[in-house]
Image 1 (cartoon, rainbow, N blue to C red):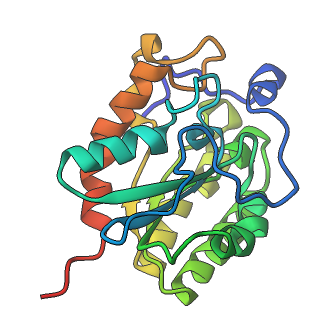
Image 2: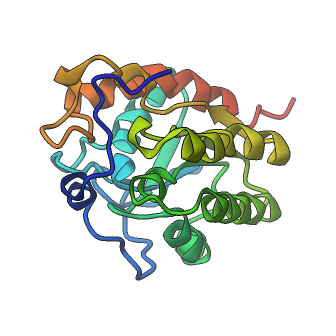
Length: 229
């Protein structure tokens, strides 16, 4: 898998495009997140991530979690997704706010979908720290009895083979270690499709969001707990 036309490179412009990291914990829903309590028969999903979840550059209601919720409902799956996506967030930031986010939810989620680590990579942060933080995040969810679907990321080629060799194995290794479900490379369906990427060369357009949802909705559905009986 190569980046090719998806020019996800660690330049100051792209880092600015991801916005500054939010250091204050927040449970406030991002674009398109559920703002009301779920119905009694709705399963609650937590989407914990960065700008790829927050809907950076899109209108309210156009984020990946919002369109994922619609796609799951179209399959007859009654869900409500709480979008805890924060633009610029790193794995450290995500770890910092987990307890606060979970406490602010109307009920325990049946699944956490996690997309974190892209900003760690763009900033050239230590893969060892990224792994440590993701390990701690998965450990917290396991302790809370919440299964996880991990949306993986790959290192941009300009960071070099050594960095990629340390970063790329993080997601499959941790998914196996914690028994989490895994999408190996979240942005895979956008490769070689520049028309699905915003002008910043990193964030998906609305059409790109729909492609990501179509590519992952079955994995999300499959990661949901099976009905008893």
